[in-house]
Image (tube, rainbow, N blue to C red; front, side, top):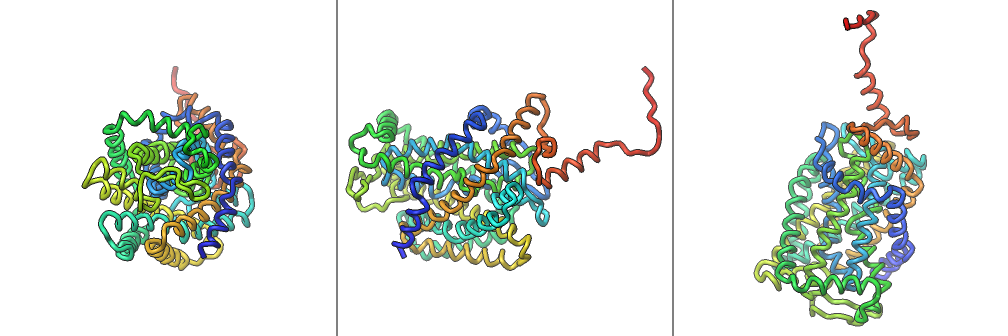
Length: 497
């Protein structure tokens, strides 16, 4: 089984996908004229604007739902894995992937808003919706929907639950099976409550856990501030092969940095567009820019916090292509959350390991909740044709089982299965957004033009030449009818001058 999983993983995550992710991010950065830089402060303002409605969630709730998927075990265990197999230089390539990936996140999230639908009183959207409506390829949309249901419902939850179980075992000596049982109960209480409960849960938990984690990282760095310049030099020199100790993993630094960067910030993967489509906004570009900012939060803030804590304390190992030891900072600690736990514990004894275990619990648990929402959205897409309500219940049972299974499996198998899920979605989604980029670019130009006029941007797809955006076409007609005075047959009288 392990050999089959590794073989499939090697095919999906070939160098072609790694460099495709980088190339697409660079391409969209130029196509959007580096919107991730030009609109940086606007992203923050948009994040706090807007309100929820009966059909949709607020921009901030959509952001936190997205971040609950982005900020997960990849930010703690994933960073450790990247450093182990790619050396400290992998951190630099994670940063590059975040900067370039922000433009990719804009494109896919804006497309999700343009082609979203109102399904049973709730906004739904994502790659399956924009592939069908924008490309007119229903067969391709179905392939993506099915791949996403399998990836988010079966393959990827185990990565998150496995890291939770490992953290609880390391810190509190809790049996993984017990951790799995608790996770299943808590997850069931949330996912059986619907989208609104998921949004409320994410809105409260995500900002709290992210800020707390970053604050502890700042304390660790401040207490070791004299080592920070050396750590930065280590990251940069290793990223470009100028560090003799890690020269053997130069190529792997790029591969693991991009691979874990995509897994962590999910730019281009196709998961972020699902909560983006649920937002109540007046223009699709607004939520696209908000989601671009979420990539910064995930990688530049949270992943960097982990990397600095691990590297500044020396609590990491690096192995070469032949599994030879290039650096041994820890002995007897499996690659994963144990690195971060040891790093924090070494500076804050009696607090560090437990804190990381609790942070990891919240990070990973909210990601599993986000995976459920993404999978459910694709089940809803398929049910437009099949009309099988029981499939939603089946999905809930499947993700609960996958969560429990991940707790009792080895970390290697869990990560390999998760990588297969991420890679499948990334291949399918990146090809789609490369073909379907024009509507998102038109929306950006329209948004910027209206901003220059000093008005709150409103989206009307017809004049932009964007077809099949039925939701926005209906909204535009309704708005126009409301602004038109009734024709009562009376001749208006001009007011006296």
